[in-house]
Length: 376
Ligand SMILES: [Zn+2]
Image (cartoon, rainbow, N blue to C red; front, side, top):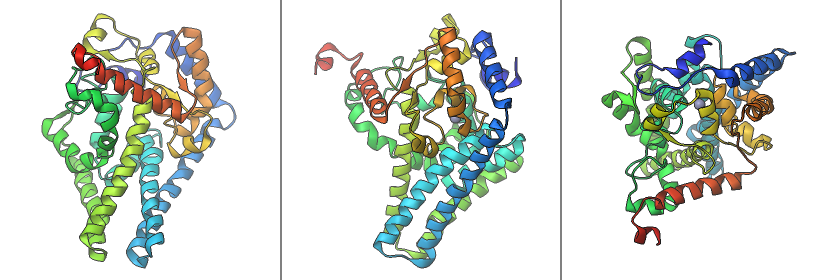
């Protein structure tokens, strides 16, 4: 078994729920993907395409910020700069920090963490906590109630069938959208602090890091507050800074939350609980595919902008590959799923994906309520 596979199957700080590792499906799939990437310069081209996105992401952000601070453009210019900051933040999140924090950017772990630190510097949330929340809690225990922090939204929403019903959830398909817009603000202001105080995310342990990672965490927060809030306050009135910060943060949050939800919280995705897994442990790779859905695979602009996260099945199976290679390996993954009887779902359009998420929320919001409530 490959070391990466072992790490994903039994991550640090857990041990209550485990998956069956390996199996013919993952073995054959990995061999076929490796063989394909070894031909010509496929892997190198993927890495170059990944690196080429970083200057775009940082360039858009830096130019927009500098124009706002030093040129003080008129109304239309300001609107363009604010849009530039929102696009820049989304690109940094999806196309730089996500890959780096998964270890897809470079071979050396330290170099990946250094690039992943852009999360602290530019997005305002700790890359250290993100790696526990995202790489361990979400990627290992996708859609497992109590373990995957991404589906824990009580008392605001019910995202998995194993979670208890509440009367107000019957409206969650309507009120969830403004809640998504608060995701980044919540992480910037409260999420990191709460998680470190609590000492865990989901069932995954989280301790405040010592040494350089700890210094990086504090320096990152200070740097973000300086460029996003303190310096703008020296140039603009407080209400203009507050409105811009809120607007950009809310916009990027909706894009990020929706992208992740369309991949996992839809009618076609499986959900499970720790109790179910104990009774019938799944093969980890099969669990990843069946809890995840691809969408809009033909839309190249969307694929570029979302950092390949419309190919989340491929991302969950090969998180350490540059995201630019997901469309390349998707036909191989699909073929192996068909051969091994693993359910592989692709939503043909953004509309179909959004509708499925909406219906999933509506059905879960209504299910389990008393009959008179369910009848409306
Ligand atoms: Zn990921």
